[in-house]
Structures are given as structure tokens and as C-alpha cells.
Length: 182
Image (cartoon, rainbow, N blue to C red; front, side, top):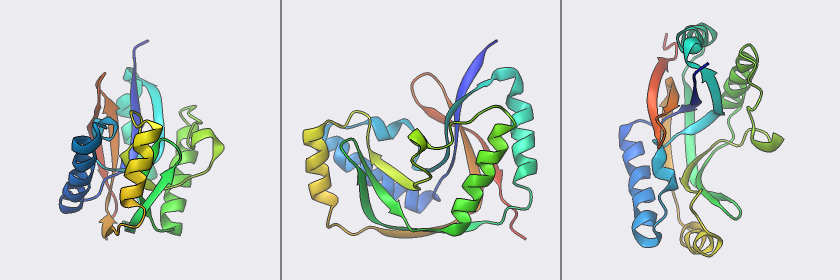
């Protein structure tokens, strides 16, 4: 049975996404880190999971049903954070509505026998990654030194959920599900 790799996230709108892209590009040019370019800027709601290709359509249809009454969520970004020694990110302010949405998706995923909703059971820690994967310890400390006291502010209305699909090298937007805006 053929399978594909997916993950679910929330993407900031274009002006903010472009600003985050510029930030990623700054560190790519200075330090050669490129891992964060494998996908658009996003907040992960469901970590990567395999899904048989013959279940993709049903999965999207069921997820749309699950999100039918979900209202858009105001998201605030505030400065930088880290998961030592390999990840630097933009922090997402604590947001109960976002936590509830992630838990709802986690419960939904169980219907498809997918249980890896949080990394190593550390819980949901919403953020937007700007450098990771190919980030070595010495470079991590240099980047962190640059952003530790640097300000980053932004906010947006999360009015859609994005399903990403891996193409073998990077993540493509597979489907976008609009949230109820009434």
C-alpha cells in the first residue's frame, strides 16, 4: 500500500510570512542553514504522519467536518525562543483557543490510528521555526546570540488550517481548510 507523509499547521498570511522568510534567509546567508526552507512558515498542529494515498480524500473530508464549527483564532507572535541545541524559533503567545484546536485535531487523528501528536510527549509548544535540522551547536549559539535580545512582534487571524504533503525533498501545501468565519 502506497503511503505519503503529511503534517497539519497554521500559516501566517503573506506579509508576515514574507517577513519570516526574510529572517530565515538572513541566517541562511550568514550561516548556511537551510532546513527551515523545506516548508512555509507555520505553527505545527500535528507532526508528520504517514497516510495511505487511498485514504487522502476521506481524511481531508473528515477533517473539514471536524473543523466545521471552528472559529478563526487570533495568534500573537512575540520575540524568539529555542529548543537547545538545534532549534531557534519565533514564540507564539500562550493561547487557550489554539491549545483547544490542537487537542481537537489530536483527538481527530486517533480515528486514523495516528498518535504522534506531540514530540516525545513534551506537549504542544506552538512556535514558528526559523532555524533547525542542519543547525550545528556552534552555529546555534551564534544565531541565538543574534536573536536572544532582538524583538519580533506580529499577529494574525488564523482563519485556515493547512495540510502539507512531502514531495520527497520538501513540504508542499496539499489542502487548505478555511475555518468558519461567521
